[in-house]
Image (cartoon, rainbow, N blue to C red; front, side, top):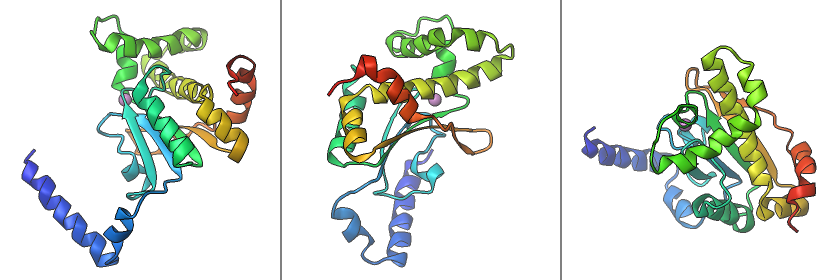
Length: 208
Ligand code: CO
């Protein structure tokens, strides 16, 4: 890749924005007020704003390998706290994707060094849902189901945080689980019953 292209593209993009609104960057520079926190995979194909058709200022974004919400990861926890408590987003989305290399790697027997503790969280999702997953004979279908179940479990991990519990109680924050299908470009809403999960786990995870 010629990196000069990136800067040329940037100049074109600036001009396009100014052509439609001469005050575009004055507005952009004045602050942000996104309504959505998007937690997706770092995979280069899962391009957050582009696949949602959103522009700058509309989504607060965090991406890591396999869109994980891990309670001792200071990075994702800081993003959630800032987005929910300070930016007061209305929606938090966990977006997985079919063909996720992180999910595939977690199902293989290989020592991947520093990736081991990260991927172990996905192996834990497999363990929790082992009966359902082992019942799926087609390997590709099993991976895809694990991608979906991983999204669900990360939504549950979100609900375990005090930020999300308080924002749900005080202002009706919503949590959503989506999957991006890299083969078709389609964004699929898993229609996770957030309130049911919340109700089910609160006995153990209630924090405030
Ligand atoms: Co991925």
